[in-house]
Length: 118
Image (tube, rainbow, N blue to C red):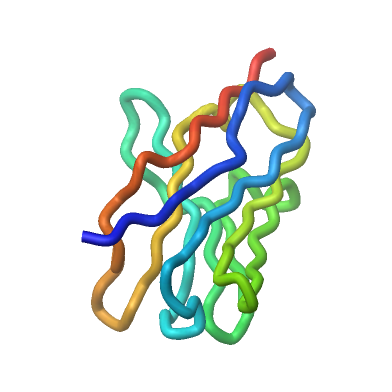
């Protein structure tokens, strides 16, 4: 199964910023939406941001006004700009695509680790 490749994670201090990238091997406009997810230790994977084919974005309440999802159709890349990071943002971040009734079109990849120190 095809996996996406996430990158851009790292260790930052609280208040810092990171930009994550997700390389998609297909035309991102073929999908209903693209999303960024995260999974912290001992917790379930959660959706933090999504962008639909029309460009509408949605965010989890915990990241609103701090995270911004965007995309580049020319390179089929989806980004997650994160500012004012908090220790509770520490998690492995993944991206995936939704297509019609298939919530996760791609197999989950390795993700990219984001660690925020206090």
